[in-house]
Image 1 (cartoon, each protein chain N blue to C red):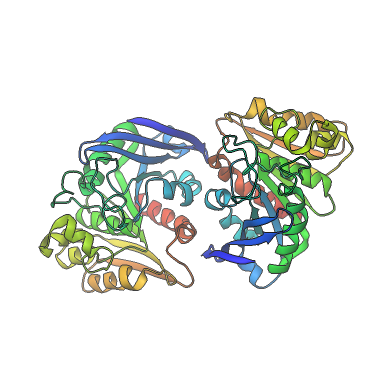
Image 2: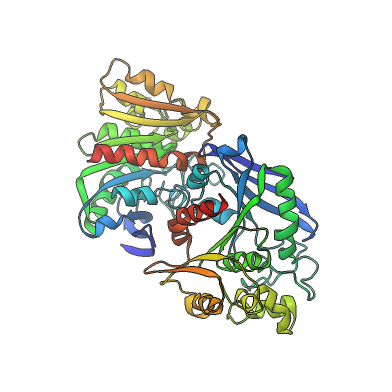
Length: 277
Length: 277
């Protein structure tokens, strides 16, 4: 693991690191905030998954998570959203496919299958590295994210309920199989057999029997992607007749930006901390 | 005034605006955060001046001021650091001169004198525009800034003690006339007669009799610019034998970045709010 930068913030340390990823077969960058408490004892970990076009840096710079994470003693890990580098396949003029648009899945179609293995990267390779390099309490992990990263958080929590104790999302894509901005990417990454898409779709996972105790979702009503992409009400419908609890809060005037995310960041961190003990 | 963007945040509104500046003879951009309270009543204003290489956007994205400003009912105005545009003189390879390096002074030397009039812009033109467009309480204004913008805040407060009730700075340049990274710019902007530099130098202003009741300065000890540029102890020396109060706090491990600024942002906002009533 290489140290790209480290800076003191709120008594803790905001670092940016890189490593050669086996899953993605390229160098991957990620950010970790370690709260002051992590100097003396293992701390719970919160995984934050970012949205389309983002890297590790967007939430690190604009998410405003450090003050509360320092107070609550939470380690925050912010991975990148796709493999990177000149040798990685991409669609240069399409922000919904390729670099910055990994959708937290393991691609099976060419030319994507070799590098676009973000599900394995986020659920196996990076956790192993982080556990080795930082003092984390593996028994206390939560996951959250924004937009495409909200989709990542929901699906990864539903598929790994024994690993994560808490899950929340800001403006998540809850049914990517049918959303305008994700269905074309799913077809390219996973092929035309829609059965293979279901394990990467929160609504389909619930329909197929996956369970997680409860979710918190915040959504702005002035979000331009609400009706044709995000549609959190579909998730609310999907969990009906299950024992999954969902707190879905719709907010007047808020859009899809980090101004929205940062406004509700404290709420989410507190919510996770209560469940992580 | 043109609206470039507006987004709801913490119940208030973060906007970015532009206008044709008479002082700088170019289009200038600035950011304003209006807290929820500003919908119903005039609110106090805090002017934040940014450092070298910055625009209005750096503190808007990384400064983490909105939560506390919303709570305290403070309007935050974040101007740019220099004139901008293709027709504006610049030194392309020198980040300490020209665009991004206005030093909050009115240049008198060619080719800078026509556009680099940031002192007039910040103290006259922009306040008049902001007072016209936003519900501000002119009798309750404070000023703060970072690095070159800390220099701007200190000098503007010292020269306008009737306008501002409060002043603070993060890692300010307190004696730009003698600092490695500002003296060459002062010579180009103001000429070789150092007497003309004194009204843009906080230590010289105090020595020449300028007064302001009190200052708060935070400074990181791991700041790479501390010894050859910032040197806050010079300001501490300058105010000895005056009735100016200075709270100078030196912080182990903190650097010059927005990780440092955001850590102490709440402190500064609270400090200003107490003095703005």
